[in-house]
Image (cartoon, rainbow, N blue to C red):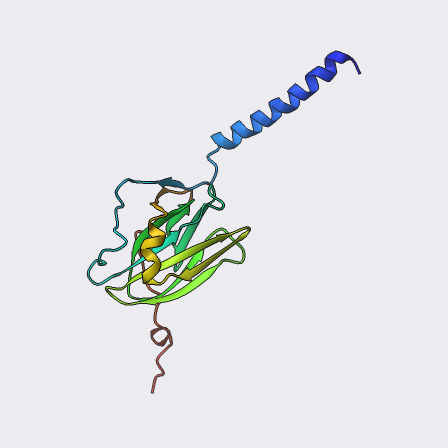
Length: 179
């Protein structure tokens, strides 16, 4: 092989990597768009809107800082975190199934909320493992101080909801026997 071909081959390989990276960027990778506003649109410590409850997901960890973690409540995308951040949303009173969207099996937390109730969920980040757990109210302020508010504004092929409906009551879902 001539010296001239040996010099060109590494450049061609580097050129292909750059082309692949550019095409990935231009194709609109499926990464959700987050804003980090200076003033949170929902105060995590304020009373919820009348007749609703408020759920806040708090991720105070710097591990996997660039990983965006979308969260669903009863199948509705309600927000996402990236790095140490949190978000809040309104929830109808009743049963809620909160899940991390992009992981198999999906980490899940089931929660029942009442009107006027505030609930805080700790999104625990580990190496290759994410968990959801209820955060006690006495630890909320400490965890919020480590975070900034994240607002999910755009995501490919999924609508973002500001209010999550409750699951139907099992007793209402059963057919009523006819006499």
